[in-house]
Image (cartoon, rainbow, N blue to C red; front, side, top):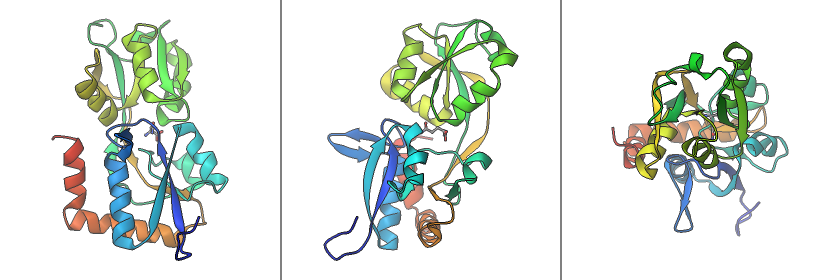
Length: 230
Ligand code: GLN
């Protein structure tokens, strides 16, 4: 896509409903990822347009050239690095096991034998749960977005879910969900901004420079603390 001056506008994939990283409010995209990439685009002098989609659609859309980059709370993984290049890490996250507030039975994966665990398709959570299914003996229910997955457990249709801990913590405090995380973290992960492997070296360099600038001038801290109170 080009603007009126004939310069490129980069299409940015975001996960449709993933607060505090991306969400829509009063018709506007908001959240940490949205503000970070806007600020990077501004300090590096490029234009962007957002394209929201289910998380599972993002990597295929990058591969098909429908997206130029993605910032979607996407964890940097070795498997994804086979098809994507990532920016420097910009956020520490990882998976938490979640159940209902009143559940005293489920305190770890060991307690999930015969239970149903909800996951979001295409995520590190989905991969982790799939790889450990036989070991723990649960069944898996797949969802396309995080809010549906939260509801499934809140309604008692599934007994547990996995989600990135900053995301579930935010959902529990802002949406009054009757959910809680068990104490132990299942994984440690880091978010990166993704582009198609080998195709966007120059753009990735700008993104890294922009990110560093935001860290140096305090903008990064300002954006994060606007959404996540320490
Ligand atoms: N961080 C997880 C992943 O990269 C989940 C991302 C998301 O649901 N938007 O798979």
